[in-house]
Amino acid sequence: MHQIYGPIVRVNPYEVHIKDPEFCIEHFSPVKKLDKYGWWYRVFGGPWSTISTEDHHVHKTRRGTFQNFLAPRMVRGFVPTIFEKLKGASAIMDRHVRTGNVLNLSNVYRCMAADVVSAYVLPTSLNLLESDDLGEEFQSSLRFFFETATSMRYLGFMEPIITIIPSVIFNAMLTQPAKALIRLVRGPDMDKSRICLLERINNNQHEQDEKFRERLIQEAEQFIVAGSETTGHTLAVTTFYILQDKNVQEKLRQELIHADIVFDGNLEITKLQALPYLSAVITEGLRFSHGVGSRLPRINKSSEVQYKQWRIPAGVPISMTSRLHHEDARLFPEPYKFSPERWLQADSKNLKKYLSPFGHGSRICPGMHLAIYEINIAIAYIFTHYTVINSDTTEDDLVSKHDLGAPFPKQDSKGLQVTLQARVTE
Picture 1 (cartoon, rainbow, N blue to C red):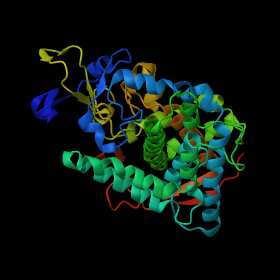
Picture 2: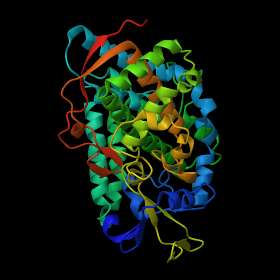
Picture 3: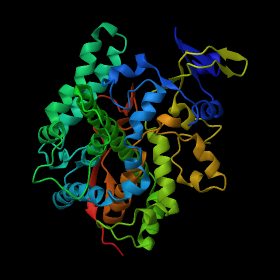
Picture 4: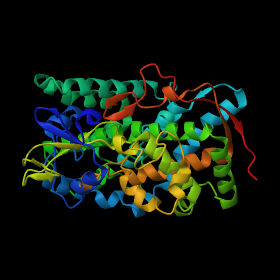
């Protein structure tokens, strides 16, 4: 539509979409008091959760109960748990090293992402990496939820069904973690050395009524849903493109070898993040995977918005799509070429403002630091310890084909199929 009609188009009777990176940076600025568009976000259920909260001021209050818990300093304290989950993934990889069998690395990544985010949010993890089916039921349920919810956006009379879908999936999959959540009581087997995110919310809440208990469940649902598919997809996409270019592989491996990173529970994440080529690889992986797969509408209820010669009345939803910016050749020459080197140029710092895999403004993904740490640790560990060989996976198996909120590949995608060899570190 933008190619035909220009940078601003009406995508439905009530909403306009703008393709203009500079305007989006300005409009979605953290200082802007923008509401979410209820019609668009209601399909994900959970009106009490922070992610689905429409009103800017209510969102600010709800997010404030856990904002500090997701700050980089706090997430750094969670690195031992991230590494523990990575070791679980590594055990699966080691078995495939011994057998020589092909491994669906996409499934491993998604299970690891779900285990990490659930361990941060809940008193205990989902432990999908330990499941016999490698979380296949959970992953199928997750895709079913996104597909169904997106379709139901246009069926307002089915809204009561929309709101229970995530709860049905959640309660079916979480078993013991769900019981621990509902009780919000630590049992004798719980790790008392840390407090999970939901307990932080619980401790900050003065009035614990029925609606508040429902909010806790909805927060857990949406954090886990949001933090599983997106991070898993980013890891799979990044790994695939590394494998497509031997030059990228070798540069990454040499940097990791010379950095002499000690991979254990005391891993220095700041040292890892300071590696320039690793950082460039991951940043390019985020650009290719997009983070959020769909447009993000926001509403300025207090004043009209001026865009070039157009005056947009107050209350009209204005949306943007990060993928359109990530693939804009004016910003990223040869946008479909995986090129970490673009992030090593002198002007790369300025370029990063156009990268928005976690969204923009005051509604930026609250779990972004957890995701970034996890991606850094996983990519660094895997390419230090294994020789990874692509087993007939094509780009078509991984690129986003469906606008379902999260980026999903085609329905019959076989995922990232690889074989593995143990690598002797130098």
